[in-house]
Figure (cartoon, rainbow over the protein chains, first blue to last red):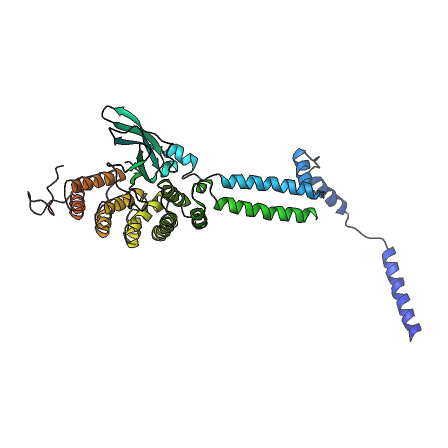
Length: 190
Length: 212
């Protein structure tokens, strides 16, 4: 049984070896076709600066960072994020403000006042930010403020203590803080 | 500690700092600690909802500048946040900050949300800031909210912004001259709409006829 199987195996091996030893017959035009394809290939071009940069950028690298250096870098990132987020967001974008600001004149008649300040949404209700000036005899006070489109609450502070609404402007919807305010809307006009 | 863990820890720290910084606008430091602790989350909530948080800060600063007690400031800011949410629900997510602020003012004065929705439909391609402000201003002058809304809606399809402001000034002047607010608004609507008094020479709704 086993001897018979060995005979068959030897016979198959001999036939394969004979087949491999026989010369391969090729189509006479085969060489010409191969060379034509090779000639049609684009010429090899040396790598340019862009190729080298791209290759450099894609090449993976490993680097070591000490825990202290890692903390320092991360602290720097945290500081940037912190201060960027801490900056107050403008009411409208700077570009929009530059394009759309409308000068608005605020007037108040206060003959006996020694100082008048304008406070409102447009100056974070800071008393010292926008003082009015007398522009005529009789106590006519004025200041002009460029305002972006929007709806603003405001009031006058006379002599540093007395809150006055603008008598020539619509009243604010409520005086929930105990002293009245006025409203100015900047849109297509005043 | 490996560098990777260090970076992860630092990134988490940066995120916490950033979140804290966003919630604590430096202007809120002008509030007393109790007020600030209550207002800061409201401001943060507005930011997260895409609502104009500046308006809330401004309202809190107004209260602080006027020396209002903490509960009143917190109540005002809370109410404003609710009004801004109502305005956004009525005007849609495309509403601008000025539109939302003006819409919130109108809602605060009891103008119905449905009026804002209708106004958006009528003036779909124009800013609603002035129209909504006029609605709120008239109501603040004593015109009933429904009458103010009806007046603005009646003119919304034809008036430009500057004409809306002239309309408001006319109503205010008539009120100062003694006209009942609702009648003053109705008379101005008739004038702007090109209508005439029902009886020539007779005041419409008790108002003297306006001259062109």
